[in-house]
Structures are given as C-alpha cells and as structure tokens.
Amino acid sequence: MRTGDWLTLPQAQRLMAAPDPETTKGLQDRVLLGLLVGCGLRRGELSGLGFADIAQREGRWAIVDLVGKHGRVRTVTMPSWAKTALDAWASAAGISTGAVLRRVDKGGRVGDGPITPQGGFEAVVSYARRAGLGRITPLDLRRTFAKLAHLGRMPLGQLQNSLGHASSQTNERYLGLRQNIHNAPCDRLGLGGWKA
Image (cartoon, rainbow, N blue to C red; front, side):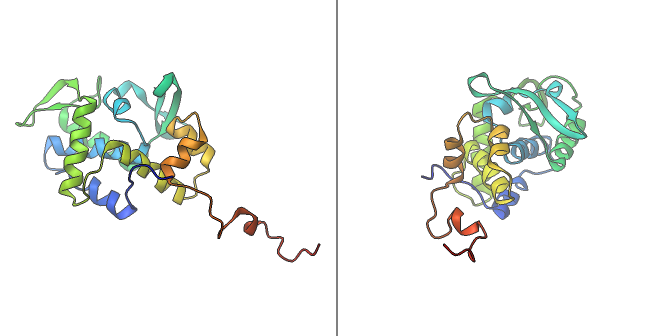
C-alpha cells in the first residue's frame, strides 16, 4: 500500500535549488529543505532543532539524541551538503546557538524564535509549487528520504533506525513496498542449477 507521495532524485534536487541563496530567507530555507530530504526529519523535529543538537560522531556530522515520536531517541547522520548549507545560513544570520531555523521577516531580519512546524509546512508547500512539483508536504520529503535511501541500497533496518520507526511496516508504507511475485526473493538465491 502506498500512502502519500515522494520525489525522484531530479525532483528533489529541483526543490532544494528553489530557494534563493542570495537572500537570508533563501539560505535558511535551503537548510530546511536539505534537512527534510537529507535527514528524513519530521517537521516538529526540525522546528525544535538547536545548534547544540548537532555534533560529530565517528567523523560524521549528526543530529544527536533526537527525541522523536513516542519519545524514541535516535542519532541521524547529516549529509555533508546539508551541513555546508547550514554553515552558510548560520554565517549569514550571525547565529551559532539556540534554534537552527528561525523566523525571518520580509526584510530579511532574523528573529530569536524558532520557526513553527506550520511555518516549515508552508515553506515546503510554497517551494514545491514554485518548482512545479504540485502539492508536496514535509511528510512527502520524509518519504523521499526513505525512498532515495532505499533505492541506494540502504538496509531496511538501518533506515528504520534513522527514521525512528518502531515498526518495519511503517517503512514499507513509506516506501510503497508490496510483495512482488515477478521479482521474488527466491529468484535471488542463486540455486537455479540445483536438482531435486
């Protein structure tokens, strides 16, 4: 069963390129989209993200001890391109503590308060329309993360840990997986020459 939508790799790239990198808001929104697509965060996790939550683990940048749905704690690695976008935003905004994503007014002034989950939702919907992708939501970008990682041969167990899902069935719904009779697991065993 498939629920919701996800983007192809070219569509995801088009969406993440939609914000204007010459503006303060555009720099922040590149981070917002990058963390949704590149880390599979929920919009509530994104609005609560602070600079103190980002650290190196085993030589990789990660969001550490992220408290997700039902209080499940996980560490989510961050792609280098998302960290580069975050550093560009932080430098332009002159911030290094507190909330990573903040309210930015029409004049480009950065506020102290974090963006709201609804603000993140509206930004995604707006950029998706601007990129010609129709109505795409933050949850669709979480599904995109899952789908692209799965297509890149990420083991389902590790994907489940990264997303913070308690059930593998949730992963299957995110990925739109269902049993494929024509390309079944037994066809991949390599025992075609065995005679009974």
